[in-house]
Image (cartoon, rainbow, N blue to C red; front, side, top):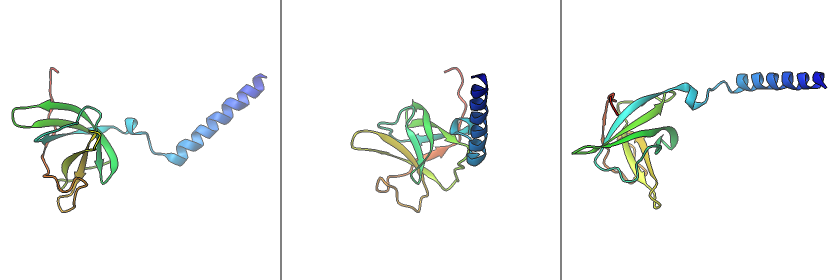
Amino acid sequence: MQFRVGVLVLATAIIGVVLVILFRDRPAFLRGSYPVTVELPTARGVAEGTPVRRRGVLIGSVTKVELTDDYVRVLLSIDSAYKLSSEETATYTTSLLGDAEIEFVRPNRPTSSGGARPPAIAPATSTSGS
């Protein structure tokens, strides 16, 4: 009986190693991320956890939403596997059900929201105390 359990454990370990070698890509939570701050004139439906996409591919999520006197500051966490270029701007869309989504697009490409005015992207800033 103990021999069978040992063989099962060994076979599971070998299969696990083979799968790691085959897939090699670490899960997103192990890859790390970097912060990006986006300033939007309005952010209806945007909240913590709102998906961030580039050309339809999920690249991050919203981590914090702050209201200022002039705009809404949205802090994003972008997967370190994806590098944003300085040409890309952030737009946001909402579905008929009110679900929001932030998408990075290049200015010369039409957006899925029909060409909404892109907001300014500011470098990430660290906040303390909250």
